[in-house]
Image (cartoon, rainbow, N blue to C red):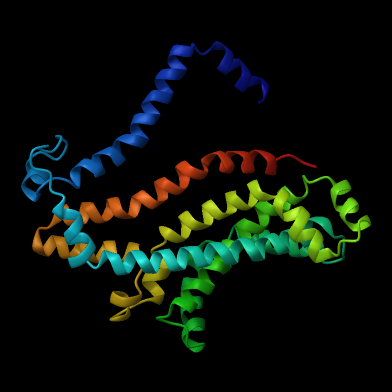
Length: 288
């Protein structure tokens, strides 16, 4: 923390700091709570009393049933689970191996390759969607989970490699040297020694990759179109369809229920793994 920041922190009363943090907490948490209890209202309650708590004697649990079955959320949910877990596994695997090689081995192309992957972080996804669309069409990968999976992995790798390079550099070289002296080869050293030590970093990459893939809409919309959306679409596409259908059928309760179904896995992943996320970000920023 620099001197001006320390002076501000020192001169700001604790009550004011707590008040600001409380207001921030309310701003973050209230929309989620509002979404949760709105999903249990009828359409009439949603329109007449949008911020009032629902009638607890007549909670509309059927909203979730209609969203899950009539809105085909179950199929979209399964597609998102498959794509998110596959993207997570491939990204962590490839990023950890690439980052380990770039961080621990010294060769002529190490720095150029590191900057090449880093450049992927500054290229907006929107900039490459159109070229990717024609490239995917030429390769016959449009309207397929395989094509979308390859795009997700390619766009997630720069961040994963960037984070893990910094993390592998924090691991003492003496541990690598000890494994080599004990007779372990490069693969054995990586899998048995270095990768377990990088667990907080890989968990951080896994969390961001999962959340980014789970909530991604633009590329899924571009690469899964027409009739294929019904069978191959992800949850964001399904929610867009459910919301559009709700405007025509006035079934906003099911639309809000679909949003809750989409939100809960993200909250569960973050709550269960946030300790590892904080540790990974902190350790990854320390120079070894």
